[in-house]
Amino acid sequence: MELTDRLNERASLLAVMREYLSGHQCVEVTTPVLRSFGVTDPFIASIAAFHGNDAMGFLQTSPEYAMKQLLCLGSGDIWQMGPAFRGGESGRRHRSEFTMLEWYRCGWSLSQLMEEVLALMNVSASCLSSVADDVGSMLSASVVHTTYRALFEERFGENPHRLDREALIQLSRQELGSLAQHIHVATGRSGYLDALFSQRVEPELVVPTFVTEFPVEQAALAKVSVREGDRVGMRFELYCRGVELANGYEELGDRRALTLRFEENNRSRKRLGLPEMTLDRGLLSVIDQLPDCVGVALGVDRLHMVLADANGLDEIDSTSAL
Image 1 (cartoon, rainbow, N blue to C red):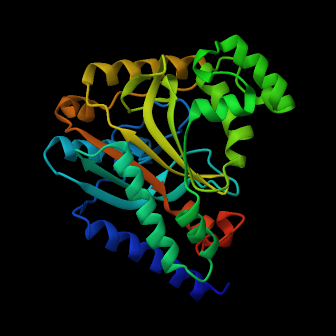
Image 2 (image 1 turned 90 degrees about the horizontal axis):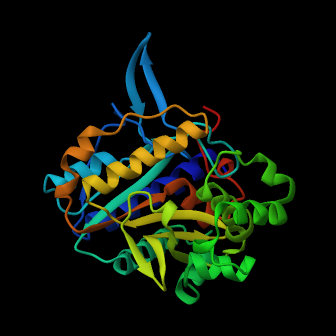
């Protein structure tokens, strides 16, 4: 594809996303890309920025924390699209710098948010109709809603919420072979679950599939609830053609609970030999004021890749050579 065609295709995709959200009572905002705090999540690497020898802060892995501060201050429904940065991300589907679309809805349920994600994907597929016919057909005919547990049990015959770490180590060795040797010896349940799910389940999620009720260790900043006797994170991920496209939460607005999660993340980082991260005091100081809301982050580059039936980001990235 010629450079001008790629540029026009991407411009059309961004335009319809902006038009959809702005036309559905959601306000566009812009938050800083460079902030004082990185994230504590041991599986996400924040990139530090320096001026000479002086640390300036971190390039943001997502606009989540800053946008939640706006929500706490009374912004109402908001969205933002722009660059996000994560260290150590490279490959066909990963970049250290990528484009993220994130938005929040106050008073909505996760089900309502999933419906809106589908609506946004539909308009996105329509604007790229010359290459996105297959995805458009799938969206109209065969969207799947399932749980993490159901997929895990179907593939491995085990309830993921009830396997202890030793059982997960054995299952990983059995299912992943030599790949299991690359899992850090100090990783917890979450690391083994992530390896098993990403390597053996995700590639099979070809039609658009919403996966809900993740293991409690992967709740991140989502609320936790009990489903069929298991404590689960109230969040979803959307997959299509074996690619994770979006990640949504029923947002947790409890300072004490979030502080405990951040502190546990730092303990995990220490076990893994990673630097501990200073907790984001700005977010924690206001998070108790977070309204009842749901939020979702969508990878724009990955969505473009899937809609264009591309095998990797290089095929749709007009700036890879810059």
